[in-house]
Image 1: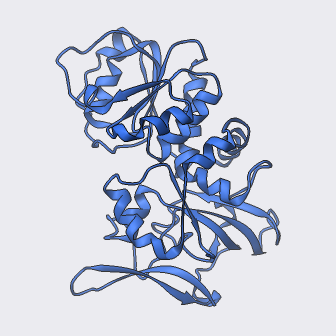
Image 2 (image 1 turned 135 degrees about the horizontal axis):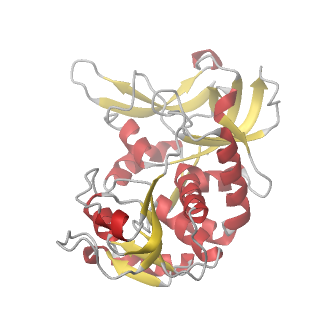
Image 3 (image 1 turned 30 degrees about the horizontal axis):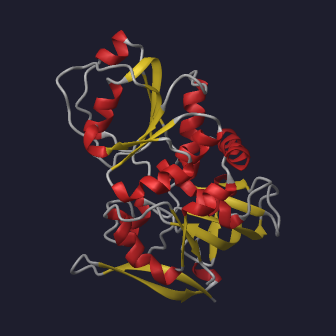
Length: 330
């Protein structure tokens, strides 16, 4: 028997309840690889799935947790053998499929990535989908020509999970990082990660009539979307790129095409869920090399399975800073 956070739904009221329960191996779905989970983490999607589901959960009872890292216990796929350390992000695990808020998980071999050298399972979950997405964003900006010395790189939602890791990676690679935050109390935290410029959110979250403003940013990792993304597009330097990773500020984009036509600005969409295997491996190898582990450690907020219902609610309210690492065996 093992512990898992199980979300159940009352069909009459439509309300959900999440609590830690004991399950057996026979309760797990059929798939090729059984993993003894060691750590998971908390993302915005997890908050939705712990609570009302947000349209992400297909059927109940459900085990959330879109990320996990652990050790292979059994595998019918030759790519993995007992004892291998693995990490999983994406593939709608924790949404449509049972996820990592459990001491055991059973998943398709195609969904796993070997843990790269230089990372342990706890560090991998301090990275998680948020950090993996941040690395994909940095890689996309570099693939489109960004180099240190081109000017400041803007990170919106900088104190959140994606923003924290993006800030630390960019600073470590030699970029000048400008962090946008709506929480003034996080300024020292962002500076500790390597940000040298702190931009108050209110400076960017208003739409303006001018489609172009002064060329300011050499690149941008945007976790906010909405009016802020529209505003930032008009402030990008000629030929610069914005990597769009989130929609904390809304899914709408009240922008014009002028920045694309007159400044050659690129808007790069970053998806972490269905990312091909080769690019996943490339991103995880870069994380192990380019993310300073002392900075990663400073982001970590430890948690257990019992803490998850409250943390799920907190992250939906924007009240979680940095990266929550869930020790599922604690």
